[in-house]
Length: 197
Image (cartoon, rainbow, N blue to C red; front, top):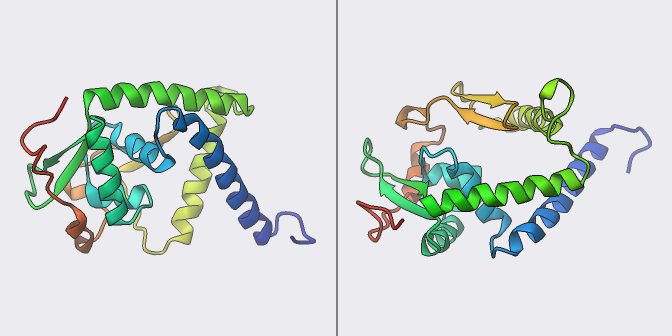
């Protein structure tokens, strides 16, 4: 693509190709359980147990609100996710994993990690820090620099031991998304007031 190794065009090509190939591989792992990559992203986000507004789930899963609503409806039908009215802001809906959803996420997480190990990506590297965590940290930094609309979230900090970001506080004050995105939260009358687990 470029005569100079490491040129911006090479970075774009490599990142795009890696994302496509990794998505294809993980999609095959998840297909055995009838889950899409998008559903996996939602389960991963909700696995922290804190519940997230639908607008945040939409942004983090990179799905338009209408598509996310259909996907979450499917996850609710499978008893993996439930929705509740936010106790602080009753205009908003928060999504959570059910007990079954937590078990399924843990089981699938092991399968996904095993698939990555098969690729030669070890669980731990030098000093006990997963190499994938370092790569994720570098990519998150790049994303933050490339996306001028993304405001830094001081409550979000890298957790190299888990290979992911962890929120110190996901209360209503930590929502990073504009109020206009809140219109995408919707009430699921069938689950308000109680979960289906």
